[in-house]
Length: 483
Ligand code: HEM
Image 1 (cartoon, rainbow, N blue to C red):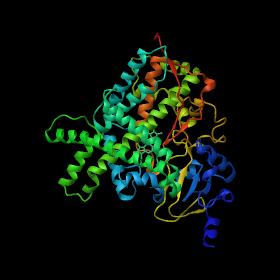
Image 2: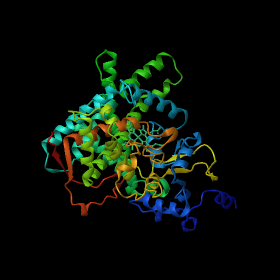
Image 3: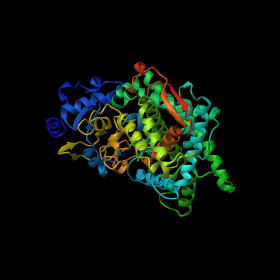
Image 4: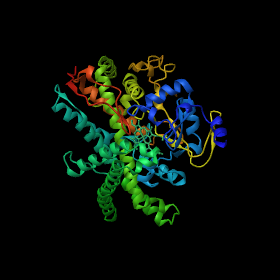
């Protein structure tokens, strides 16, 4: 009786199709769940609910609702997922909650801003320079293979990875270094296995199946191994600080200085800067930066190669502004078409099509006129927002002009939410934009990119793991003859 009463006030959904204990899980497309959820939103509206195994889930398919929810404190928690909670135990940043999360988020945000993650101003030059070091190397490596059909994955993961290594740990690896190869392997396998074990989040019984236990053990051992590598990096940085040796500005160094400062001041928050927290935080920032930025960049280069005609328009824009050796962020401000091609790639291929879920662990509340019970998982379905044909006519078509206003200026609408919105929105949004703008401008300044794969054999639905990545593909980078 009580359940029926609650059910009447929660958002509508396909409740008749639910199967006891497993709920709606078997009806979701396992390789493209965002598409199944999008279809449901057409029937049940912009806010609907499902039971996914043991987790009551509310799906938001509208940007206004997503913004409204995520602006509120009670929705700033994370979803009650076993796999992530079982791996991170409340440390790091992505899965933390409450006052601890607020403190760590504010710290990392300050570190990144002080290191140059800002929209305008002289301070951003330091960060820009670090990103450009990576891009210049990337261009040199591509140049060696220009006019050949190549899979650019290795060049991109190594360059993006090393820019991230630089601002997170203050180090860069030789591309063939064993430690770097091992860290990449742990990251890729970890992401794959967490994806494969996703079912265990919803169905407790799956946690006891031998395969899932093995995967989970691998992930946990992988985390320990990763932290061992980090221990050495952290020790080196501490030694440099103790002996006043030079150490590159990075999150790690700033965190250690903050920890010392809090301890010296007997600050009651000093305990938040523990060694175990530091390892988790470094892993979170590394993971959150690399996977999303690399995925977006790979989608961008693939889409711009398929829709090759837009490259001429970008190059015309560059010529109008004056061709330079290198384009910096100030130059890119006056390249609306280039920026529009990046935004359109992010709209068409959201790297997190289901969004990163939130949760309301503290209290029952209401949203959109419905009851949201305590411990609900809230999914901000980016795919539905970015594919809504009322907002984006012919949404499957790659059309950068959606992001150009009547005066020819670049603009984004409130329905464009690749970084989500509200209190918990992507902490590295500005940094990601710096990465993408600088990479795109300087690669397209140097090369005309063509598709090297057979377009009929490319499945552009993408591969859905923790993020949506493009299928394996090949590109041809033809060196531009400057005139
Ligand atoms: C194109 C690249 C990127 C995309 C599309 C992206 C997208 C997202 C999204 C959708 C979220 C979830 C926000 C929420 O829970 O409401 C998120 C969280 C986060 N992102 Fe990004 N991100 C990108 C790059 C970066 C970079 C470069 C950093 C580096 C600092 C970063 C750091 C984070 C962190 C730390 C969080 C967790 C925030 C929290 O839980 O408070 N991201 N990102």
